[in-house]
Image (cartoon, rainbow, N blue to C red; front, side, top):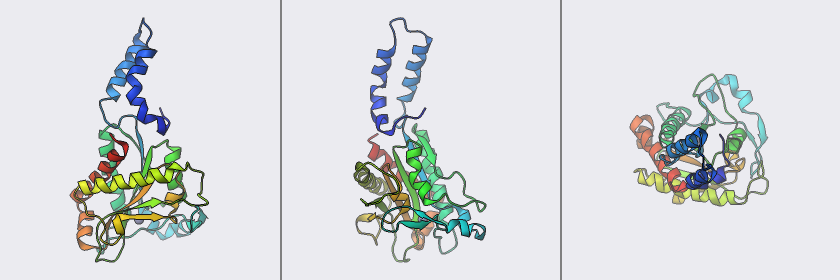
Length: 271
Ligand SMILES: [Zn+2]
């Protein structure tokens, strides 16, 4: 069952007492089943929470077959109101694609969140040469459609090789977002961004050496501009930097990044 994202936090806290109120004096099997289900649900810290993960790009974005579709522009609001559907993403100097890295980290994060009881929805469930997108507008709006409490977009940067470390991109207040959103969305995204930074540092990851405070407020990212729920893009490392590229290519390195994102999500949710 889908729940409104804003009641999930209180739903579990009140679940036991509500169940007790709902159960009649002559509690039948249905009421007992409700109590059993509730008891199972409260044992896991993220039970009842829906989280959206957006693994950036898609391997097939580099497939020439999709170039014309990929280059179609659509309205996404912000300072660059019309943008193309999606981009290829970057790669390490040895050719390990960002799309593949993003997807691998997303799978690690998804498994960790599910183990804690969360329901996880993803903007893409494949990493294949035979597909492209989804487009940034769909990625942006995705969390709302899925009733998620937050959305984290996983990326890796392709910056100058001398810089390394992670940073977060947070949405800005913009005059024309591509869909209406509550005014609290930007503030909550700031809190999510702070939480992700703390969580990544706790996992032993390094803040960006080339972005101040590991934070960038952006008004030209379609994925951010089209979201109406709290969201951030995390540039988890710099693929052009040798040590960061080694982190990206290693299963242990990717698990570390996923752990940092998990920490941040849990800090934000307070559970
Ligand atoms: Zn990217």
